[in-house]
Amino acid sequence: MKKLISLFLIGIFLISCSSPKRKADLKGIDFDVKIQRFDRDFWALKESKNLSKDLQKLYAKYPDFAPIYFGNIVLFGRNKEEVLAVLPDFFADTTANKLCKDALEKFSDVSKIEKSLTKAFQKGQYFFSQTPVPQCIMHISLLNQSVVVADRLISVGIDKYLGEDYPLYELSPEFYPYLRKNMKPEKVVSDYVHVWLLTEFPYFSEQDKLLDKMIYDGKILYVTSLLLSDEKAENLIGYTAEQWKFCKNYEKDMWQTLIQEKYLFSYDFMLRKKILENAPFTQPFTQESPGRAGQYIGWQIVESYMKKNPEITPLQLMQNADAQEILENSGYNP
Image (cartoon, rainbow, N blue to C red; front, top):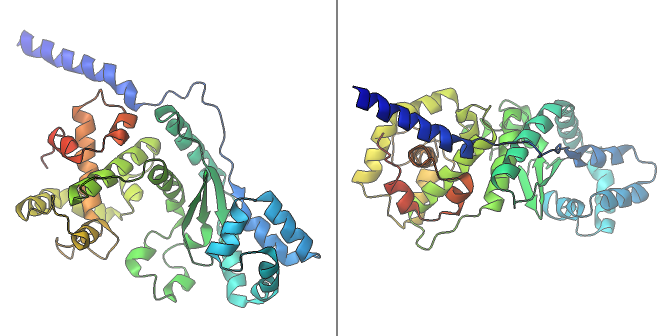
């Protein structure tokens, strides 16, 4: 009995010695994330008395983002003259007016978002000291890209986060109900962080099996959960409470399907899309399953791996491209 107690205490000691590798010490990491409101500055042009001059000022204030916005997101033009010619008709459009006004009203106060991003990126600096903190911007996408990434900047299209019941979403045939569930303000912070991690740690695999991408997605979700430890797990992956509960209850069944059908080592690109990408449900699982359930399983494998190997840092995890090694040393057994 004494021997068992001793072993138990040794286990606690080892875990307690290793756990700080997963907890960020933010002493000396002192900065605040302030979101640059391109959305407001752009919409202010509507009241301009000298549109050409004020458009020039907008380009000067956002030298990297303005060309991307007008040329690639809203497609107003590749140069200032083309943009200037489009703006009067755009500002007179009733649908555009409603969309922009609703978006700016919904995100009139972003202080809580800035606070959450500050804490997340401070943790990011602790775990990944060589990765730069991105410039965070907000824009109005006119229902195009939700998130835009360029050199050291990430911009979120706030008009894509107005809530799943927003009338203009329901009128747009491309916004299926399963997609609208994540078009809500609560996803803004995790989308900033998620995209930042995808950018700083891009996917790489020499073989590109399903397992490789599944573990990669799991690593991204695991680190996102470290940086946003106060957020609910289901929100990080973009599930409802019911979808999360399904995955917890049927995790073993889904895993057995992947094993029995020998899907893990498949090179089939279409199979990978069915298991890992957005859809009403995940094939080859039941129609009651949520989409992207393969990402959920990848996350659980990585969670198991990091718990079993407390000496591994988040940086070492992200640098390890050997999905097979991670699976084998995870002890994953749902």
